[in-house]
Image (cartoon, rainbow, N blue to C red; front, side, top):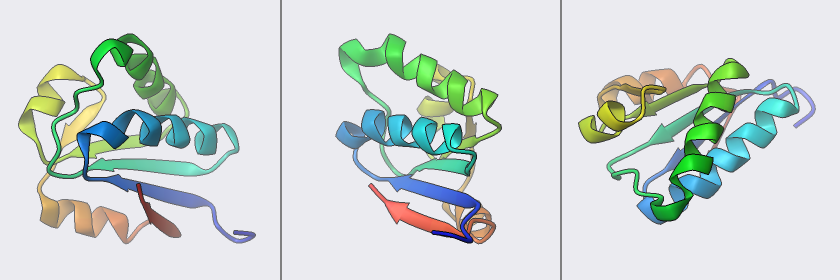
Length: 101
């Protein structure tokens, strides 16, 4: 990871979204440019919603980006940008490393 400057985290299951966002914050704190891509999953973090919202704010503060192809996610969380899967694929090309959660 020596030459890695940017990391894309992809997540497809609702139950993994919270931990994926936490990982994005951690990478952002280590000066990586991060992208969080929520694909085909509704964000439902249950009782962890307040902490999740804080994580989204932190990702944004660290100049990271959050994308989803689910309109409800973008309506519920202002940091989430609604994009198509095709647009996500293009955005993923801008990252040095991509990992699935």
